Length: 559
Image 1 (cartoon, rainbow, N blue to C red):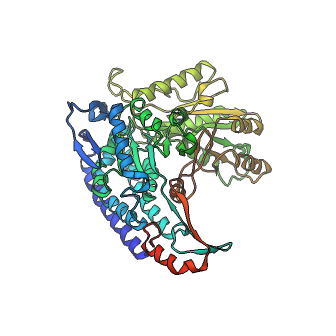
Image 2: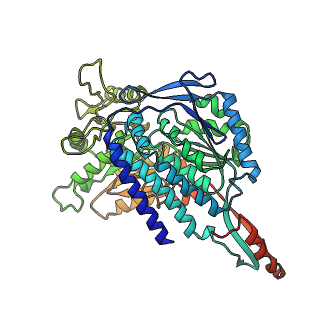
Image 3: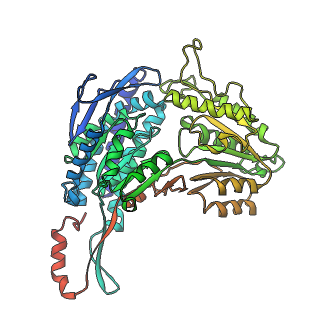
């Protein structure tokens, strides 16, 4: 088995390397995606003036037209649901009734098909959402690896092994299995990786999936239609695009959605859940907002002591954690707490690091051979929200550490600005400001001074969110241990001297409070989208024929 896996990985990276050569060749030429739909497993290309579907133009971060997105009506959305119901057929559908090994084989074929679109998808990630070349490549490749490692996890996990075992006088067979139709809504910032981290485990377990394509970052999904169509049975995977207000209510109100995989804002998730007539039976997987804290402890500022972990390295980590992909990550550091009296010094040091960050288009290679770190924001809506938060902070006593923070790069004149925003480092931030409590999801680094650790604890304990926290320290003090102990009941992950992050995918990615529900990891996602199912018997005489039943059952079939 290991040999097969190693051969697969070698082949995978050979394909990746070949694809990279073709990707670099025309990286600065804007792509265009023809509008299309996939209905009943069949892909249909559309024209921009289609009579059946209204179209919405999609523009790149360079303000060029790069595609048209079909806008489903309420009726068309309902028709997709009918197809999904046919595909699930109360658990008797073609996909769900395949053996687990047959579903695995299909997903492995899907990997090969998806690889054919690597170059196109990477370019679309750059042009539509402003992700730089390296990060776009990483998102695609990490997605492929996540899928393969999910398959490897199934093959090695006791949850999917064959055979009866003795449990308190009974013979039991336990294996996880599907629960129905899953409605998935992915984010714009990681449209491929985070979406596939839900829908692929759901499919492997035998569920039927309806994916609502995001309004921003959705064109990459149109490029995957052939891969899904060529591998999966009709009515297994479905796509809906357009206004969520028009397309989603009929799905949820029908009561036929069995699971909701939602990555986005809590208010939107709440509205969807409330539309379901029986929300108590709706299986939920939610990854929502966060206001992740960076806490610089006093010992970091004591220059007289020998620092195992120097302040300069901590500040590098904070900048990277705050501004990777322009801060558009749920795992980004969203607020920085520093000891009283050090706010200005820390903010100015952070501002120096902002100044050094390479700024430009996602495909732009700078003089040092690296790609841009600060790239265009995806739309004017994000720009205006950043400006609103900055203006509110400055009016209420905040101080900008870098004078050009929050401005757009305008190479020619103010009438021809890019969507590249210079990150703003703001100190003297206080509780009256929106940036103190609201998730910016963009290039703003707010710095807050604290008198005592009680101030820091209060923010963490009384806040809405509970995803992650980063603690920067040089000492194994009682205070550090107290923070870890207290925050262990508040946050899903506590980082010591490192930024917040989701990886590695083998580690549980969890959250509390309004930051999420469920576990995103290779093993965790498989469990989120399945239910343990038990086959049991007690009478010893039954053993003679139960082995025969197991050998003929698709559900119980050995991998």
